[in-house]
Image 1 (cartoon, rainbow, N blue to C red):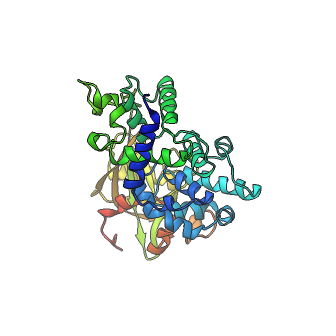
Image 2 (image 1 turned 90 degrees about the horizontal axis):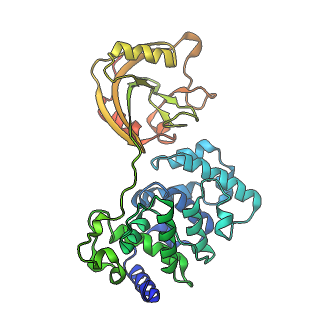
Image 3 (image 1 turned 180 degrees about the vertical axis):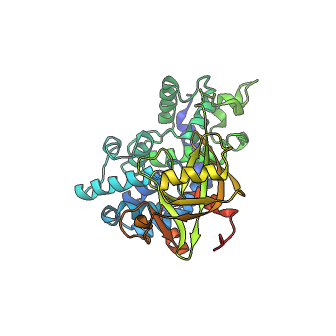
Length: 364
């Protein structure tokens, strides 16, 4: 890399001039940054910016988070998705509260649940000035174009080269700012489909931009894609004077684990009749079910799964000895909830999608 110092200086100057005013950038508190970086692992920064302040209002310190019940943490996490991150953050808070001290190196950060190479490097570079380069999706794109790398960044050899290049672009006195600058560059300038190369502070050294016949949009090179799975489901909307019937999905479920959701069963083909769906609901939840033929079709994607969901109004008569309790009574996996109660539960965006096309009342 010719004259990395000039590129570093230009990158930082651009960052200080153009960076977005995001709430976690105003803090140097280890707990607040840990919360932000765990949230940002799989969620867009705009979404995190909207949810982050409320989470810190609920759990202002590591001690407050550590003593909370995991259900409270998941409820405060609602809307961010990928709830395993919330459970890992809660476990990490308990470990840190017990130790009474935060890590001061990337290696120590990696000992915490849910903190991998990327998060540990960013925290260590920001909090301890450790020159650890980060490699997230934005940085992969920036550096793959910078090098015109012919390999997918998911390959081990390509990742080693990208990390070595990122390390050269780190200002030794401000590694945290340098890491943030590379990520911000990928978000604002070196975008996936619309790179704004003339505004890029790294353009003078970027091979994809400067080499004749190369198109920056061709990088990074795509790697092998995981096959997507299509799942067919039937979701029942049951209302009564006590509220909406929700099901607490098991912690070990292969989707929406630990979430409160409408009673839902998987279908074999998606063409099953309402009566067949009612039989499946009876097998899964007990009682007697009646489901309307009319339904709303909902599509939902989570990582490698594509859900095709039929949502219909239904009636449910529970077994006399297994009446669903009010929210909070015992640990039953079925409960009636009012609107205010639902807002405090750990749910998913699929719940809102499923209810969007339903009438307010389901009849007597």
